[in-house]
Length: 258
Image (cartoon, rainbow, N blue to C red; front, side):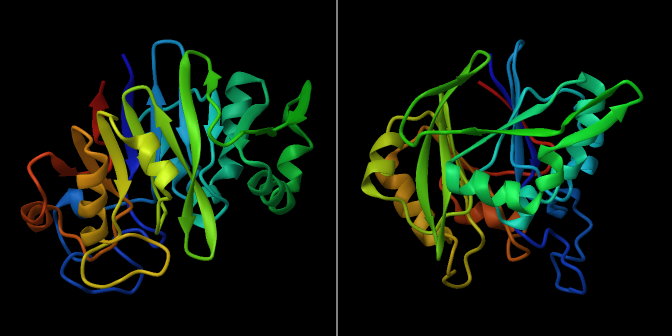
């Protein structure tokens, strides 16, 4: 069995946004409180984290996460790697370097920004090791970490790119604007699609909105979809009325068993 925990389902600014007094940012519904986008994928043997947000400490404490066997990074934007410093705590627990997985150009950028995490760091009075070690993923090529297999695929993210991941039984697509036909074909037949939808009120430069997501949903035809990476445009209660029956809205702490 694979278990998925939605650690955070918010966009880059989170919800509520700093300084915003809109109805959703002022909402008392806890499902309208969104930390930055990340998920935790686990089996009885393997625990994987996808992206290390600036909210990783809070997310880990709230969900009682003490073990991570590998970190997958979709792309090196701040809201997806801003929590890398927190891996020092995980290294202190495990007394081993954390393996970080992404494509080469993303690894190069991460190592440039966080060079000190890839060098020996004291994590106890008798041990100094790198906090992180980069591991290159090959696009469209199956990779196995522990007993979890996945295929990384590329997504257009405005002026840059991001990675999506197809696992056994579900796919994960955050931070994208356009999917190539090759990516769409890869996703066809997946049971569950966990997918970015920043909002529905306008066109977004680097993200998809509701109209485009529903068109892709009709083309890919997953059995179910779960909307993630949501801005403060989206109210948990009312947004669901705009969605097809098998498309649901995520919330922080949501758990899915496959």
